[in-house]
Length: 135
Image 1 (cartoon, rainbow, N blue to C red):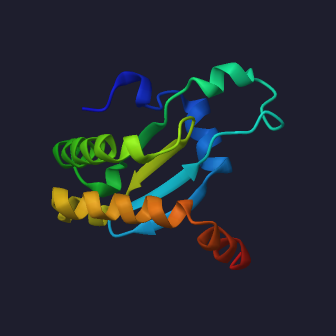
Image 2 (image 1 turned 90 degrees about the vertical axis):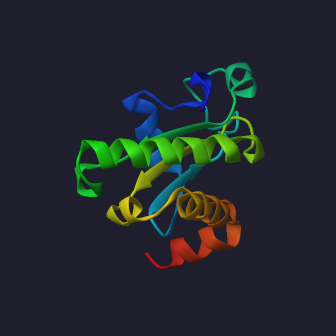
Image 3 (image 1 turned 30 degrees about the vertical axis):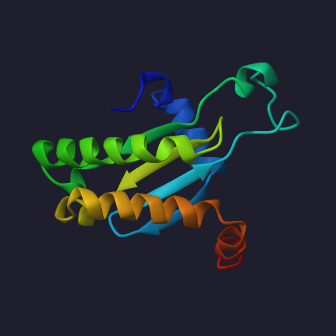
């Protein structure tokens, strides 16, 4: 189970992570990896508050994925996979996981692998440079 303090809940936090995060897609998921802000970039939050914050994950599963039963099943699987990966993420990192319609067809092991590979790709600075040069 994903602890309550490790979940992104507010719309403002989702938007900030999507705006400043690096994106990577694998299989049934798209991950937006938003590392901890440095003190120079954080105008609204005191640095002490960010230093004590754990890594957090948020999930977006749209109606394109399927009906309510399918969406909730996908969201539960992604939460469980993120809970297993969370200890490996640096403190203060926000990760938004967006499920694609393909996620409904994948079992837990495949979704977990997709999530781990997408996070690895988004964390890799080489991948970020390649992504920016394609724009």
